[in-house]
Structure formats: C-alpha cells, structure tokens
Length: 109
Image 1 (cartoon, rainbow, N blue to C red):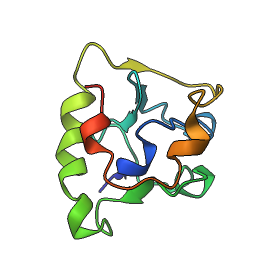
Image 2: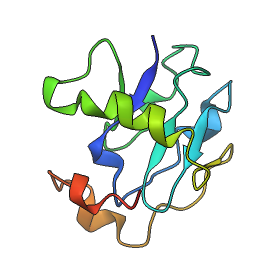
Image 3: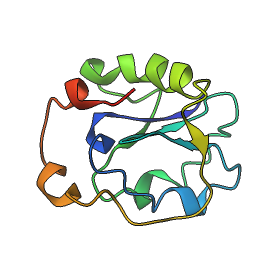
C-alpha cells in the first residue's frame, strides 16, 4: 500500500506534505508532485498536510482518480522529476487552481 498524489495537486504544488515525510519519497515535476510508491511506507502523515486534499491512500482513492496510481509510479521514475525533501512556496497562481476540477490536461509531464 502507498499514498498517491492526485489531480488536485496539478497547478498548485503545495509542498507542506514533503517536510513531514519520513522516507523523503516525494518527487517534484514542473507543476505536480508524486509519491514514489515503492518507497512510501503508508504512514499517512502527509495526507492531512495537503491543503487541497490531493493525497490519498491507494486503497481509498476515488474511482475517477485511480489512474493517478500508475501516473505516480511512472513519473516517480521520470528523470525530469527530482526528489524534494523540504517545503517551498506553491506555484504563483495556486489560489486560482485550488478548487479547479479536471486539470489532468494541464499536467506538464
């Protein structure tokens, strides 16, 4: 089992979750974060830290978000995604994207 970053993260990229991860298993892309599924220990500490609820257990993920399980796996191996272990500011226009749905087409991956 692992936790998964879902669509709500796209264009926001809050990193509050990163600083609490005991395994440093977050990776950062241009406008999205992912969790490396083979490194996540399913501790759940990161999930409540996300202000937009983008992090969920792969066992409790909504059916319409299930494709993010494979997307996290694939992008965690993408060389453009780099490990991040400290919080930093979200994307500049994160406020306008926080409540937006259907952002997958905006994913810069």
